[in-house]
Length: 482
Ligand code: SAJ
Image (cartoon, rainbow, N blue to C red; front, side):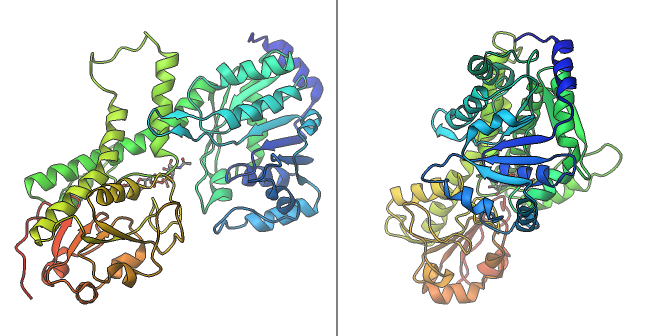
């Protein structure tokens, strides 16, 4: 890759303003992005590119009818799709040769893990998309990667594939950038319009052209320009830092349990420190961290510094990465929940083997049906391994491969030795201790609160054995005979 800004700038000048856009990957990121590009008056036409595969090909016809294939409520999305489809400004296709007609192409193709052990991302789908773009690349076109990727990917392997497939030179013949997505389920359109947009080109001309692409869809947000690698680090680090903040309060919760104090008193105390420039960013301790973002982005960042910063990184000798340690602490929380469960069952005189456990909350996030990388799974695995009988309930989740879910809380609670609150769904805040004890039929049922959802005393006075994350002040309470 060479960067002859004048040559690329000249080609782009001759091509004129961006008019026709392509979005590869009709998912949670690509669909709202394509709809918003199509709705911008500056742009004439947007193609959504979707492989006509067995699993996702159905989306093409749906989208061309102006219907959204996405699950869950997405305010404004369906109306917007109907509008831009009926205006002929948006259409979906599996014909990648149409890329030749376009001025700009974005790729929003997910990068899941190949497997959880070595945490190597599976870039195969993304790189297939990059190859499809490369085969249809024309001089002056802008290519933007939106997927979360390892720092160094845009100006590295992605650039190489585009150049190999097209015979063109990045920075000379075409513009290349990374503009990471910050969408969140339930507010896809709002996030794209209102969040600031990190736009990182492999050179200044690419950054400028990518800024021209994204500015029209921003309402409250503004473009924050930088290099492509800085943009990749920004995206992975913003989630790494969130994971770090959660690990910090999780570690404090473990300390408070060991010291016999209430972590929520301490959190309130620390959080009371206010004033100019003062922040402690106290998040919430819990049963674990799941989801598609925080569980992987730290490893993207680590891989990036290992590749780009190889032999250049100055770091305390022999010390693990603070960020990876944070991941380990968060991934430890399900084991801690298991230990609390085991200890409480022992106090209630019940062996783990054969114990009936009501596991409430399978989704990785409260009041969500999203089960990706749920921390409830490793917790359940530990219980099953020790011979416990686990009944899982989640008001938002109907099924999960290999895990039977029961239809109601009562079915889960019937004859239960222990009730585990794993996700902070609203429904679990109103559980009644007396009612649960009756349905469980146990003299001293166990309750483990993984999300600070219940009042410990309400359960203790009903004869429960209570344990809660961070509740060192209650976890060794006297057992009440009712
Ligand atoms: N969690 C805690 N304690 C907390 C916050 C979260 O244990 O204080 C746990 C949750 O239970 C969940 C996991 O962490 O298991 C992740 O929760 P999350 O609120 O971070 O939700 P995500 O994974 O959907 O994160 C997304 C990210 N958005 C994007 O990548 C575009 C993240 O950058 C956002 O900060 C986050 O949403 C958000 O703030 O909603």
